[in-house]
Amino acid sequence: MYSDLCGLYGAENVERQVILNGWSIDFRVKEDTYIQLDGVYWHGLDRSIEVLEASQNPRDRVILETVRRDAEQNVWCQNSGIHLVRITDTEYHRQGMTVIVDRVKE
Image 1 (cartoon, rainbow, N blue to C red):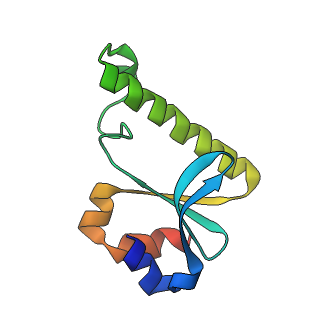
Image 2: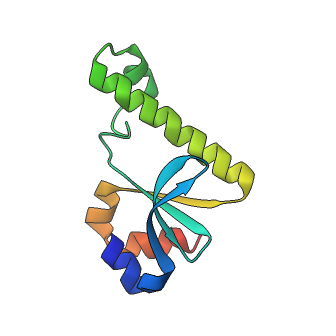
């Protein structure tokens, strides 16, 4: 994704692993847009929150914390007027640069 972002916005306009409110965010582009590339499995997007909460599996507990952190990031960014874009690994593999262009312009 980094090379695609650099191709779209220029390497001088793309930063990796930017800290925002204490969180590591995957990318920042155009000075005001932050992008998280979320793996469907590790970000709990393939199961409901109820399933994760009911699970006693240690891996699911880690995933549940990730889901909660993602929700906290979303709310904080929205309340702070920050444009945070989330793209899943499956969306990116399926749509490539199209998903980037569509989401970043929102």
